[in-house]
Length: 533
Image (tube, rainbow, N blue to C red; front, side, top):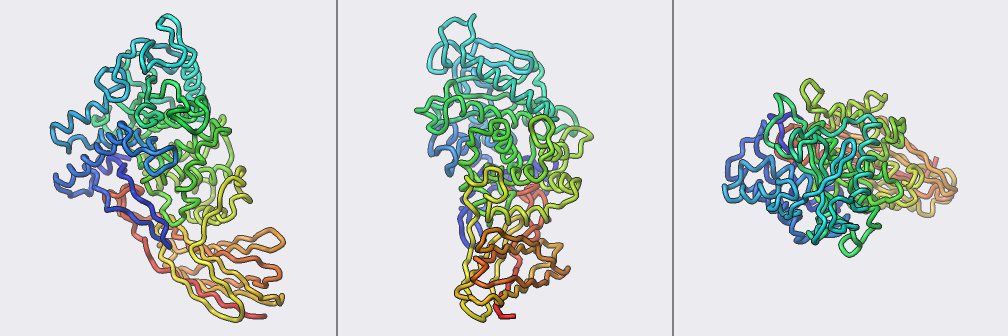
């Protein structure tokens, strides 16, 4: 996404609450500096930059950081550093000096991650790993002899070279060369040290020259990364040390790949596709399941493109839905995500779309739309075991309201879903034993151009279900009649879905194109009436 239009989606953590359809937030997030539409004053820009610096400091120093999947997961350091680099010009001189330390390469002696020299290096075709042989930051197998490579270092080198090869074989470009930085090899540098001492920090990637374009209209960046030196259980209680190293390497290295496309892209798509990619390469680890409790699966009322808390990690389930539906692969990975990133590419002459634009184009190329797939996505999330390959391990999306019908009656329900979100009303027949009971559903949504949509799912007592996308007229009206005898029907779901992707872009938000949605909170109404035919 081009620099004059948007610098960065914020890393300020949102508190996402589960109310009936609307998430809560502590406060409006500070506005990112430098956006095309921003007219914020220096004081506001400084507040935002100071908040980002405080966030980085919290993550690095391990203050208030929870375990994987918690409310303040330290995996977010990569984008927090990205944000800090792009906001530094709004800091005071003293705070800018502090920020510069966080942006140093590890091993320079004054960086806060690995503040000791890393004098030893071993390289493969595309990767160089840096380490030391003594002290707390030495990796497993170090013997003080720099002429021999510790087993752990070789394992990291081989793992990341394999990850690189898998991404390249899947059609992605290698991460951008850093030229003479990091020893002058032009390869991707990986630094090994005791990151886990900082509150269980798993790893991160960053870049050397984030505020300077390499060439006119070139929004790609080279990257270097850091990983822990052993992932020992005392610091990392979930998974085995090897599993933690593998999924962290795959996740963070995918950020290095992404930076070679567009360093400035929307945060939600950077993190969600990286979390998706780690599970594709190391499917048996299933670390990504830790994020499902704060995902669109369990919080369907939160807009899909939200960047905050840990929600954006849980959005990997959206890419799992799409790639199980469109499974065609290049190498080991489904092609769909690659096609999206090709449209996000911010190098000179490339399409340079923002997140939901690129997604829409990739889906259109497959004969479908965001509107259709979003409705089906929220629908299958009500019964994940019937759709996903690993769906038996996923808890279904909750309903926001249950309504029971015990005779001929009528009920009306109003919802005001935000963009790219959903709210489910569960309708249950209670004692309607005759076979001729029916349920008549009348829908009144916003104009379909503004995102109004409904999904009806009928669950049969004998097993099985049927899903239909409600056909609405262009004014948002429609109706549907379904069987409703309690002999045969367990319940009926009606999903209120807001499929809108319309934004006023560059308005300092944590959503697509930092935009303000045009169609949030519009009124949709369902009227349900039971009768005997």
